[in-house]
Length: 397
Image (cartoon, rainbow, N blue to C red; front, top):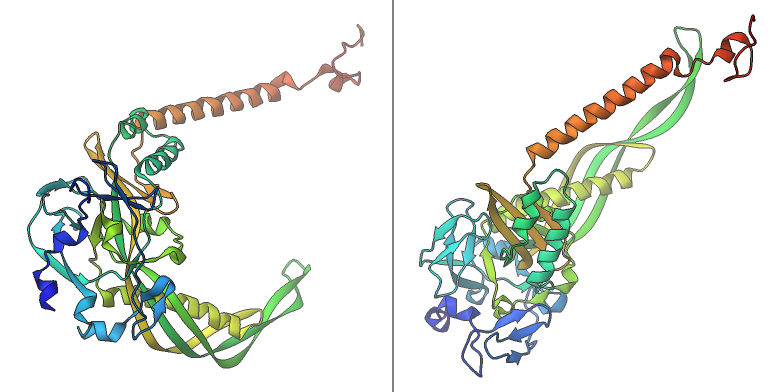
């Protein structure tokens, strides 16, 4: 690591003092630039993307890094950084903090934490998607989602609307590129139909498959296989925020983090690659089935040669609301690019009980009505004596 890097305090990199008053400026999603809440000064974020690196470029000039070099700890020092972080004792999240922050509530699980003053050395992000939604827009999206919940406690939405602050967090992800070539052997099935006679003497048509052995090769280049690099939120939450429009990736600049926080990755590069390989493998199996063709396919064995693996560490914008309702923690996440919402919700036992009682009453009423109909409500006298329905029969008949 160079001397200049060593002498720079990690917490200073994300601070942008206003030229007019010296207060910290923040990135405003609605305007796409830095603003000073103290004096109203604004500052544009300039684009000074570097030249292409030795491993190629992603959209927007974002460099891809060599996977094998990273595993051997041979990345250039300029690709690494140190940040001051706090680790939540409950969910394990590692969140970067400003220099003057010493105690904070975890944005992911609302656990009160006391920060340490240590630093975390990690691969520097190559790119990020800046926040597109303001905190108010994220609040509106969350409240709309809450309003559609069935059997939620009456006080839940009111509680959420009381101005509960949402935290803008840049969540870490890995993306992987790879070139794959796969040889396989399997069976191709061709359907045909025969007529058979059953034990009851009746005939029926039966579909059968005629199999023949096949071999072949498929290839695919995988671009930006996205893998979550955090364990602080349930994976179902973050998976539910997809899709992300990665075409909007910008080269990493600390300006975009001003006024927000960034989570450090807790899923290592090689561990993330294992998940990426599983995603690739599922697609390769689909490619093999398509290549086998026919009416049915059986995959026997296949072997994949993977080469040219590169990766990026990127940050994606998520608004997080973590709160406690009647002593229990609940979390909501909002995609800071699209406004898609996922979260946990409490259930109202009273509302569920009332719904069950009403369902029982309704079911009993329908059953009672059918019983009345069967016992006479639809047993018209005219149907018994041959006269028109609903008319009395003549006396003596």
